Length: 197
Image (cartoon, rainbow, N blue to C red):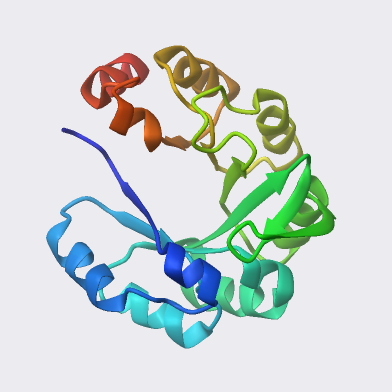
């Protein structure tokens, strides 16, 4: 239908702290002809390397970025723009371990730390809105864009063409649309035509 990239999350991996569906991920990487990005339980340099070798284009670090900043620094040094940090927040504070554990880090504070380590792109999700079909946290996204000046991919609560238009105006690099595709609230072809026009 024209999606320029596929976003994959290994939810089993996120909760276990290690990639949990490697064979399926390999199949997906072989079958999908557009670039893919994967997150969920990726906490070691060897795992990042393995995923990139099987055809995943971008690897998303979340919990590992909070708990092991040195891993992020090494990953950015070795793999450059193939490394993305997932910035998942609830009420402005970063959450980890499959969104089960809150930290005391603000999203902006965490982003600044990650930029110093070489991170060049973030995926921002307000997890209180994810899957709700309400609307994205436009204020937080605008603030993050202003503070970081790097590409931001927005996720969480996106449920209409209007949301996509606003996010484009704010200057996000891309958006992750999930539930709204399943429910039919967003038609992918129509959405792509709307934002490319």
